[in-house]
Image 1 (cartoon, rainbow, N blue to C red):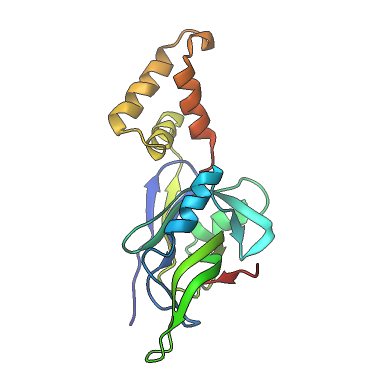
Image 2: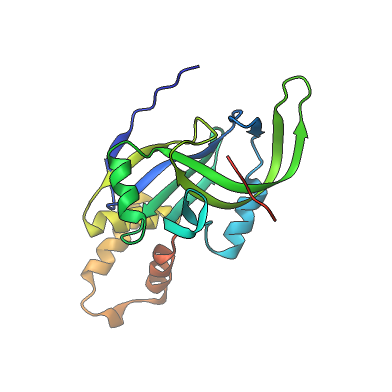
Length: 209
């Protein structure tokens, strides 16, 4: 089955992108991650207060940026990431903008899996997620970067960060307006500092797919 994906260029912080780290369809090595398989491991990462590393082709010594947001839905594991301004980041950004680098892949250890004898597909119902990588040829054909971003004003970037941590658009804009109206940093209330801290957060043998 042939699939066509159009790469969308949207406005946000320069170097940001979005896409599917994994989808619920059989991959090229015979694995199929099932809905719900990410629930436990994502809860574990949320409990740690940070997200898995974003790597270059599963190389643990070559981080390429940070994952800002990671969530599972009825299609698969969706992420938003930001490329670093050093190391492999600039190279990855250029290749992404050239539409040459489009793949995503996850490094994981299956915790509950069962081989379907009728189809030969290994169904994964639970797993430990360790990292997400940019890659040229993903094992999962649906694991692709779908959106890249161009630069925006710091105010719009702040709005997106606030919405990422749970504020509505109206609340985010009101908060930004409050900050702009402060005459001195001393006027910042504790709740302001707490929200700013949230904005600052980047949001065995492993298997890759």
